[in-house]
Each structure stands twice: as C-alpha cells, then as structure tokens.
Image 1 (cartoon, rainbow, N blue to C red):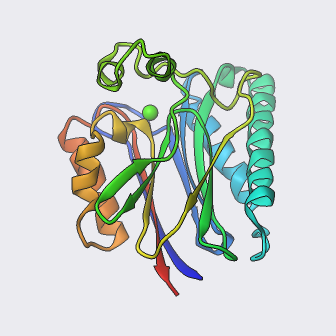
Image 2 (spheres, helix red, strand yellow):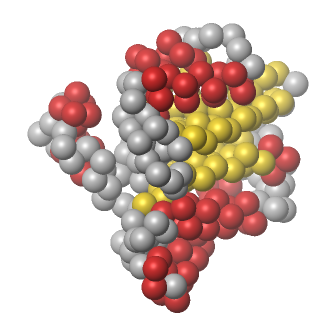
Image 3 (cartoon, rainbow, N blue to C red):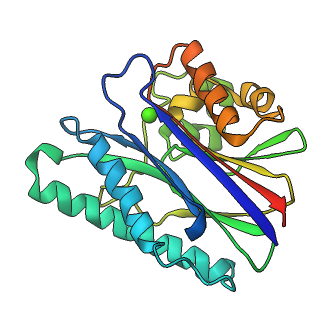
Length: 248
Ligand code: CA
C-alpha cells in the first residue's frame, strides 16, 4: 500500500559528555524507535541500548503483512514489557547500572491498511507532519504534562517550568506501567517524526513545522533538525528518526 522510507540520526549535542540516546531504524522489519536513557553512573546509554535491542530482537521476525492494529498493539505492548524487565534485570546484577532507565517511542506501520501504531513510555515524542500541519501524537509522561492536563499549567508554562523534564513513567522501573498505544491513519506523503527531548526542548512545534516543511531527502531533513537544535545550544543529546510513507 505504501513504501516507507526512514532515516535516523543521533548526536551528543554540545553540552553533554556522553550520548545516552539510542535509535532503531529497521525498515525491513517495519519498526523504528527512539530511546533516551538516564540515571545511574553513566548507565543511561546501557538502558536505552537495551530497550532498542529488545525491540529489534522482537521484530527480527517482522509482523505478518496481514497484521491489524489490535495484534500489532499487543506485540508492541509485550515488547515494552520485555524491555522493562531486561533493564530491571540488568540493573539488578550490575551495580553501576542501579537506577538506570529510559524512554522509548516506537512506530510500526501496517501493510494491510493505511495506519500505523505508536507505542511509548516517557517524553520522547512522535509527531505527524501532513501538508504543512504538525500534530503531536504522543503525550509526555512528565509531571508538567499532568499539571497541564489538570489545567494548572498552560503548555507554555510547562515548557519553561524548572521541572519540565521530570518524568512520571520510564522503562526500567517497577512503576513503568503498560506502554501508551496511539494509532494514526496514514496518507501518502505523511512524515512521522520520533525524537528525544533534546530536540523538543530546543525546538518548539512552530520551529519543527518550519524545518519539516522543506522538500529534502530524509537524511538531509534529519541533519537540519539536529543542526538547528545544536545552533540553539544543543543542551541535551539530540535524536531524530523520520519515517515517510509514499504511495507504492
Ligand atoms: Ca534527553
């Protein structure tokens, strides 16, 4: 139904000593993901890598082309649970990894119908860019988001709040909970963006819309997003995965 092209890039940014983000782009398995690790003694990169490796292994055998949303959602849900367990177990046997965790946001398109499924835990986001319009598909698992949901903070106040990066749910904890599952319809030309908060703290939705509204190959588009996040200060690790559907 659609040809999917995807490209991912991760960058340390300008202010962090290490890159604790990880990404997965596996078009043949119809899966891509971004993970943003944190915590412990420099073990964030271990957590994010474990998460995407768990996902990659689970999709080594790609979903059937006939799979539908409920089964694909279950599959993603199970992988997130497995990733959570893998991180907890690793931390339990490696002291230096105690307390590590990671976000993960994964996207998998269907073949049989024009839809895709997104699973996520944490504050790495998925957006859909369609004909100049940008829609955030995921909702951050952050404390400030709960305050926005309760009407206590405006989105703008949340963005500039000193606790803006405090996560409420993360893989690698007993409280991770089930992945949030979001589905989206897909039209030819749709561009999906998965990114870590090193992108979205530097670039707001208006910035992203402008940067994505340029007819460039995905690798150049991803590079432009990273370059702009760095130009604004590159305060955190920066990871971008772009996936685009085009009529087959
Ligand atoms: Ca980050």
